Length: 506
Image (tube, rainbow, N blue to C red; front, side):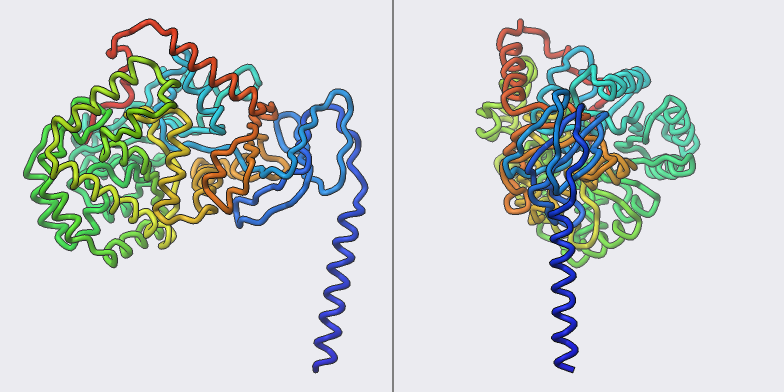
C-alpha cells in the first residue's frame, strides 16, 4: 500500500510539473496591433481570491480578449502598460448613489467617481427625464465619447405612499415600469400598499428595493419579495426585528407620529431627539440570536443588503471634524459643501447630548450587524448613498470599504461587495465583476494586494474604462481640474442643489 501511495504521489508530481512546463513554454500570442496590453499583472479572482501572477491581459474593442502567461508581442498601433507586479481587479461598483441628476448640469461628480476607480453605479432616484439622460450617457460611455461610470440600474419616481391603497400602489408600479424603470424604489407607505408595491414589481418581472416601512417587519418585507434593503432599512430599520422588545418598541415608534424630515442631508435632525429613548431601548434589548434568524430569512429569500454604512455614519456623527475638515471637499460644489457644514453645525445645536450618544452607539450596533448578516449568507452590496451629506463622489465609496472592513468583513468579502456582488445583483455577471476574457475592460490596477489589506483598494495606479487606459498622472490631472473649477466657482443658491428624485423621508 505504501509503495502504491508513493507511486501515485510521484505520478501526480510529474503530471503537475509537465503541466507547468507546458504552460511556461506556451507559444506567444500573435502580435497585437491594436488595443491595450497590461503586462506583468497579478489578476485577482473575485470569486475565490486566487491570483494569476505575472500575466498579460489583452484588451481590444473595449473587452478583455485574452489573459496570457506567455509573452505578448505588440505592434505600433497597440498600447503597452507594464503593470510591474501590480494587482488587477474589476472596476468598483457603487450600488447606491444619487449621482445621475447631475448629468449634463454638473458632470464633475462622474469625473471624480472614475478617478476613484468607480466604473459602474446603481442610481437610487429617478424620473422619466432622468431615465432618458441615463440611456444617452450609457451610450456615450460605450462608444468612448464620454468618460464616466456606466449607470447599471435606475428607477423612475420613488414610491413613498403617494398612492396609498394597494391597487393604487400596484398602478404606480406599472406606470413606473412603463416609463423604463429598471426597478421600483420604495421608501415607505401604508403597510398594505407598501407590500402591494413590492408584490406588483415581482409580478411584472422586475423587483422592488429601498427602505422599510416602520409598520412592517423586516421578515415580512423579505417574504413579500423585496430584492434589496437599503441603509439597513433606514431609521431603526431591520434592527428593530433584532430586538427582544420588537413589538412594544415598534408600537411606541408608530405612536410618536414624528413629522418626516424636510431635508435629506441628515434626517436624524428631525427625529433624533424624539426617538432617543426608543433607540436606547433597542440597543439594550438587541438579541443576536434573533437577528441571526432574521438573517437566515434574508438569505433564503435572496434579500440583499446595500448597507451604506458610511451614509449611516455621517448621520450619526453629523458634525465630525473629520468630515468638516476633509480635504476631499475640494471636489464638491461650494454651495453643497456649505450646505453640509451648516447642517453639521445644526447637529450639535439641535440634538441633545444623549441623543447624539445614542445615535453613535446605534451606529456601532448597525455596523456589527452587517458582519452577522454576512456570516449568515446574506449578500452585501457596497454603496455610498452619494448625494447625502459629507459624501464626496468616489472617495465616499472608499470610506465604505473601510467601514465594511471595520464591521468584520474580510478583504475578499469587501472586494466582492464592491465588484462581483454588484454585477450579480444587476444581472451583469456575464460582462462585469471579474477579470476574464469576454468581460468589459472596466478595471482598476492597484499598487498593493487588496486581499491582504482593504486599504490597498485606495492605492489606484490606473483605471481602465471600456479599454481606455487612465494612468495615475491623468487621474490626478482630472481631479486637479475639478478642484480648480470648483475653486473658481461663483456662488449659487443652495436651492439649485435640490434633487427632485431624492425626496425627504424617514
